[in-house]
Amino acid sequence: MPSLNQAILGSAVIRYPDDPDEQQAIAAALSDADGVVAGLERVIAKKRLIKQGAMQDLLTARRRLPGFSGEWEEATISDVAHVDPEALGAGTPKDYAFRYISLEDVNQGVLSGWADVAFGSAPSRARRILQKDDVLLGTVRPNLKSHMLFDRPGSDWIGSTGFAVLRPRTEKCIPGYLFELIMSDVIGRQIDEVIAGSNYPAISNSDVRKLKVLLPSVDEQKAIAAVLRDMDAEIQTLESRLAKARAVKEGMMQNLLTGRVRLV
Image (cartoon, rainbow, N blue to C red; front, side, top):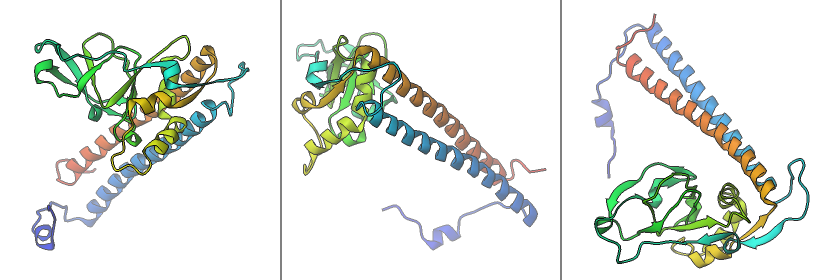
């Protein structure tokens, strides 16, 4: 087990200025940088809570957007989307090349990467055929929310069988609204009930088909999805600023704590 002890720490080589005033100035500069990072983290946490509250209200008709009225329809996922509509068969040519998305490539709506593979050497889970505007629901450890709205154009995209691929019936439910439902506690609580007490937290595609949703008109769905999408965009902008602030702090540490750069 990797560990540190006093002997290792005691032998670590450091560089430092002799002048206590310079040490204090460096510490103050880095503390200010920490303050910027911490401030952005607080704002992002607050924005996420606001988004979560908006989802709770807007996706359950607890609060309606101006200009909309009327009853909402109760439905199941199978009513509003085709579940796993297409898959690669065993007879797929071994040299068929595609871009493969695994569960590990998706984190709460964000696609972090994929693998370029051929069918003959691809993982056995590489089967789900994807197209633009499919909604991917991670069925293995679903509490991690390896879900996303697949927005990449083109063909030759294949997803893991660890996803349930939901292809919205757009006359009933638009992709953006279905994705917000999948990410919300409306669906999350139902999934928790299914996997409660299980040694292996996973849900079956049959379970996915039975998940219950509430649907307003398509126009109201579009309006709700737009509001929530704008909130996501604001959070992503802040997260980008946070990443830059952390990089600046890291660069300051590398320069100021090694004497590469001296304060005036």
